[in-house]
Structure formats: C-alpha cells, structure tokens
Picture (tube, rainbow, N blue to C red):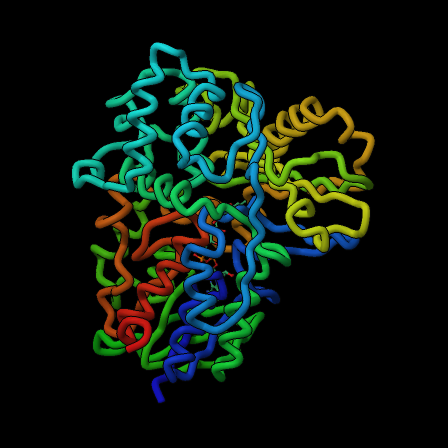
Length: 464
Ligand SMILES: Cc1cc2nc3c(=O)[nH]c(=O)nc-3n(C[C@H](O)[C@H](O)[C@H](O)COP(=O)(O)OP(=O)(O)OC[C@H]3O[C@@H](n4cnc5c(N)ncnc54)[C@H](O)[C@@H]3O)c2cc1C
C-alpha cells in the first residue's frame, strides 16, 4: 500500500489526504496545532462558535467543497439566503443572490450609483463577466486595467475594487483580470453564495471524517521539521517524535515553508529563490461581537467606503488606519442559529491589513472598523457581551507564515492561472497542495480545488 504523508490539516491538505485514502493509500496527516483546519478553523467561547476568519463561500455547495464532499460521500450542507447581503456605505441596498435576470442586473447597476450616462459601459462589463469567457490576454491584465476597457465610472471601480479585496485579499490594482472574471462569473452564475451549516469548521470536519473512514489518521501537535530527500526522491518526514517514511509527501504548509522544510540542496536554488520572492495576499483582521440579542437582520453586511477607488485600500500600502473602512461582516448566527446561544447573535467584522502589521496597527485599523460598525448599527454597542479581536499575528500563529496572509499567494497576473506554482516540485514524490498551488478561485475553494486537481493527477480522474 502506498504511504502518503500530508503536512498540514488545512482544507486543502485534508481534502487531498481523504481523496487519496479513499483510493487506497495509507495516509497520515501531520498537524502542528492541537486542532485541524488551518485558516478555516474556529474556536468556541461562551457558547459562540467563532471562525478565525470572516468566511463566506462564493460557490456554496456547488463549488469545490461540495464536489469534494460528494466524492468523499460526506454531508456538507450549505445555507444560502436571498437577498444574500446588505450593501452599506457608499450605496445602501439588498444584494440579490441571483443577479442573472436582466431586470435585476439593471437594478443592481442603478443601486450601485452608476451615473445614467455610464450605464451602457457598466452593463457591457457585467455581461462580459457573467459570460464566463476568459480571453488569454486577460491573464496579463490587472482587474483595474480590464474594467477601464468598459467603464470609468467611480461606482463601478469601487465595487470591483472591494470585490477583489473580498475574493483575493488583494486590491484591483494588482489582482489578475482573468482570476477576477472567472470568480465573478462562477459566483454569479451559480448563485450559491453561502455558509456551511455548523460554521466554517464543518468543512475540515467533513474531510477529516472521510479520511478516518478510509483508514487515514491525523496526528495533531505534530510539527514536520524536515522533509527527507535522498537521490532527488522523497523519503519521508521528520518530526520531533520520530520519522514518518513515505512514498509521497504532500505539503499543505505553503510553498515558502515547504522550501524551508526540504531545503535548497534538495529543491535547487531556483525553486527556493522563487518561493522566497513570491508575493502574498493581505492579512484580514477581525472583530467578533458576541451580542445578547439579535441586532443585525442581514446574513452578511458589505460596507463599501465613500472614497475614490484608488484610495479605498491605499491605507494598506501606507500602513495607516483607513479614513473610511471597507468591512465584510458575516452574521454566522443568522445563517445557522446554533452558532450562538439561544436568543443571542454572533457578528464577525473583517477588513484588510498590511503584511506583517503589528498589533498596534491592527488595533488602530480595527478601532476605525468598530466605530463604523457601531455607527451603522447604533443598537449594537448596548448589546455587546464580549468583543474578541484577531490580528495579523493570529493568522501567522495559525500558518507559520510571517506575512499573515489571509488567502495564500497573491493572485496577481504573474502568480495566478497558468503562472501559479505547480503541484510538482523538483523532488520526485514531493508535492504542494492548498491555496498556494495548482488552482484558481477564492480562498478555501481554491485550496480544495487544488486538492481535487492533485488527487486526480496522482490517482486518475474521479471514477477511474
Ligand atoms: C481572516 C480570514 C478570512 C478569510 N475569508 C475567507 C472567505 O471568506 N472565503 C474563503 O474561501 N476563504 C477565506 N479565507 C482564506 C482561507 O481560509 C484560506 O485560503 C484557506 O483556508 C487555506 O487553506 P490551505 O489548505 O491552503 O491551508 P491552511 O489553512 O494554510 O493550513 C495549513 C496547515 O498546515 C499546518 N502546518 C504548517 N506548517 C506545518 C508543519 N511544519 N508541520 C505540520 N503542520 C504544519 C498549519 O498549522 C495549518 O493547519 C480567509 C482567511 C482568513 C485568515
């Protein structure tokens, strides 16, 4: 039986491990933390089940999560809502789950505040995005450059910029147009934007269940310290508790940490230098409000700042607090009431922060977010039982990545699509899986798509 060791129990590592175990491999997942799930983990405090992230899932059950769960034969139900979200700030309206019907799309353009004379350009842009067609030249463009082909309207630009930060934790000045168009097209064609019943930890839990059922194991509190390679072939993984021999090692630890674990002598200078130079997405930092009563009636709130498009995220570049914050705010207990004690509400407000931001700067940014949330929902301040904050350092603690990136490698034109790092490494039997390698998409969905792709490469497509 082929022995596989997976380093890391993020959603990508677990899904890949489970898929390989299902095909007959003997799979051991090594996880340095006492819990599984990586950036998709959650913690429970006073009966509130709080995600580490500000998680929503663009494709719900119809994307890679559902695809993996169905292949693995485990339940992973998602909750969707129509309207899916309340847009606030620069515009104020309920965002429909399904924007495909033409009257809804037209109304969306009006509600976003697009000037009447510029509606035709915006209309063409939305239709092009919804067509799902990715032309090869879009791989070389940023989302901003692409949008400029259709529209100069400030409302269009702010909307796309905020969506890029939401999808990729990178602004539209730097994100790949192809990646943006693909994710926008998929999300709004599927109309399945949702949240897992049981909270986002239901995703790693479902994959772990499938792994155990197929005879695999997960060793928590077990950090990989070295990937042993001989004659350019992987031999296994060293931990402080011993050596785990393997025919294949699949690293979910990200490309930079994997390069450190295997070393330049095994991977070669070119690979290690490239891994060190790749750019990461921004961190996301959060305030989690545990409330003694329901205050917010929406499943999600999306606050778009009232600023020119190029200023919306300049604070990240300048490493200062924002003037008017972009906020993405799921209300998990409105999607699944079991995530808060009866009669109470859990709200998670998140925004982008600069790479490696210290606690002081994270707190200054979150102070601005807190003030805006309390301005938008005046009843919230009086209902707070407890507030918890997560900073860039918390994500670094989860992943070991000093930048504290929310997603993985930034999906810039030079690092996404055909230019994303591949699963294969220069070492025979050593592969990368997760948000850094081999797939497109949004956050966890990209990580699980990476797992599906790698499992197919190693064992043949599903069903074979
Ligand atoms: C605040 C925030 C908000 C987000 N919002 C969304 C969202 O709304 N939607 C969405 O889809 N995505 C979102 N994401 C992104 C998403 O969570 C990540 O892209 C995804 O979870 C990455 O999964 P992964 O499989 O690459 O592994 P990771 O989650 O990075 O997990 C890697 C695992 O490897 C382990 N590990 C590392 N090194 C070692 C070692 N040496 N030995 C053993 N174990 C090791 C780590 O402990 C970790 O458990 C968000 C992330 C954050 C932080």
